[in-house]
Image 1 (cartoon, one colour):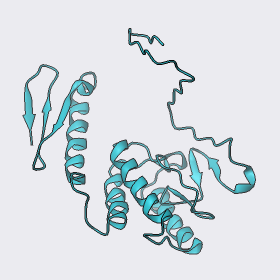
Image 2: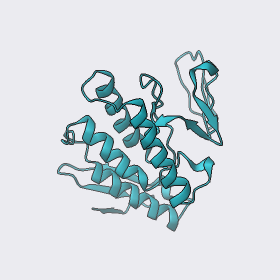
Image 3: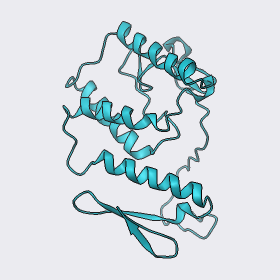
Image 4: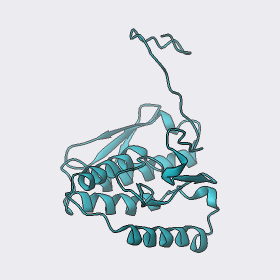
Length: 192
């Protein structure tokens, strides 16, 4: 296939899926399952991840306004441990109670509109820590370094606020020992 901009793929493509936006739809799930989507909110989910009525159904990647790959990593580690019986999930009643507390926090305390139910922003970091701690018995996997990912996320956000047209041109490099450096589009670099 040949793509706009000149990128060429030698592989034969069976299909190309282009996904944008955050309008969730699950036409492959029968309505009788009980998963609902209203105002961009998928419910009823425990931790924006597990279907409370049957936690063998999980929705990895729903949260938005996040650093996606660290969040997906934490979610998938948690699901893998839960589904293999290595960590217990709460009862349906307890999952529903936690879901209700999360909704109260988001809609009443924070004043978010319903359509922002899965918006995380800064909330993602405590969420990631909680999932990761449960999935790894409190021992962060070697090389994972969630704190480092948070620093880079903060730096990228600051760069975006300073220059929205150029921040995506910056390249981040992880260094041995937990540090990182960034190369600016002009090829000057700074580090932490």
